[in-house]
Image (cartoon, rainbow, N blue to C red; front, side, top):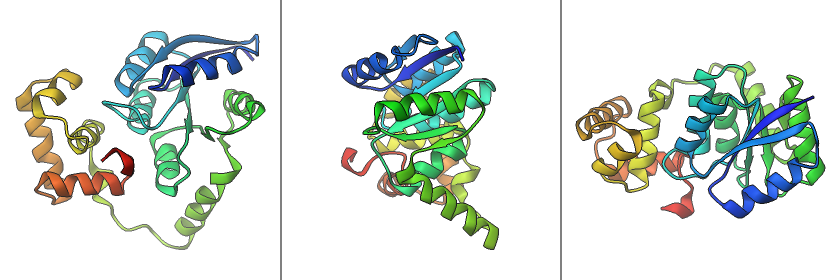
Length: 219
């Protein structure tokens, strides 16, 4: 099946490696590359690829938040997360955001191509090392209703603000990246603090770490 594919990873060497692998299939065409989450969203809207191969850890907007934004606007574009992270929070957040696949970066070449083929045919693909998390979470939901989590009430923009605040970006830097005014940044920041009942930057950063918005080693 023919597929137009966008690669999103902040390391050029990684993108070139994936490009070489994917180009082995004549039916797969790399139509664009992105080095951060904001660029991944913009290029997805511009190019409308069938598949986006998305890293999680990227600057400005991480891969999970970028996936959520892409799926809101492009129903027929499917996202495969390709990440080094195997922790439960990353895996579950990816699928909640709308990803159709989650692949570990050290997976074999054949598995990457297989995941693309599966997703193109409408199937979810999960690397065996992380599949257990999805099954366990589903079993948990069957047994009991999950308690309310204030994180679920945040808008996509507020989640993006939370990531950038936790990364230590200033109000003006966030405004420039998001394309909004510093005043609007402050409005979003106040709203997410109110929803989370968290009222200082240090606590927001700890919360973002807990939710997997930024990796522990980045802080």
